[in-house]
Length: 232
Ligand code: SAH
Image 1 (cartoon, helix red, strand yellow):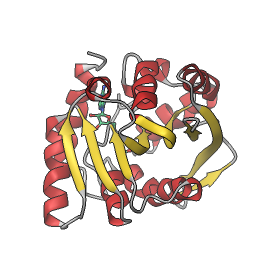
Image 2 (cartoon, rainbow, N blue to C red):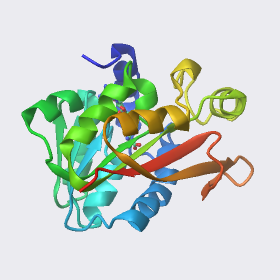
Image 3 (cartoon, rainbow, N blue to C red):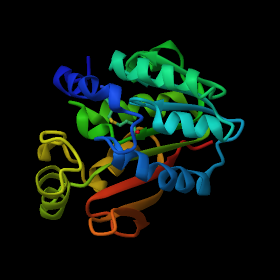
């Protein structure tokens, strides 16, 4: 199985705090509207069948469902999925389901099942991210869209995402990220191309520790997202 049990355990341990906007998950809550608005500049989610890979407690899944998408969120942390399910029930979120299944296993159940696929802040936690990209490429319909986000690998991302975020600002627990697993945009682009996807757009995300705000920018040196499409 293409998953690191220690990574899954890390997220499971914190899962009960997933929907606390001041918890370890504050950064995800803060970037959520930014990434969803950016996704929707490419493709509106309303009425679309969307797969959210590595959905965790469901912050993005939930927001997409509220904008009218039919969402399936998948993850391998059963605790995170329970939290996602409970939150959807309490908040009466329409059209969202969660399942504990590996994306590669879902791809074996059938190809071209989804109009859109999101896989955010997850690739840097798996042993073989290219296999995740490949399974996503199988699962998206021809003409469909895929959105990935992760952390770049360079001296600045080490300084900002590990030293800054985990040790100085303490935005994230120590050990959340492992530098060697960070992914250069060129590597992610190569995996997408080898899976037959066309790269459409790249966007950076920046953070100001004084104002405690994130914004989208052209600077992909730390946090970034890419949009790609499966040819019709
Ligand atoms: N995508 C969500 C959560 C990101 S946290 C968001 O951006 O809001 C990373 C998530 O990836 C965790 O929930 C963790 O359990 C999950 N994860 C790690 N390895 C995985 C794997 N191999 N398959 C599915 N999910 C995985």
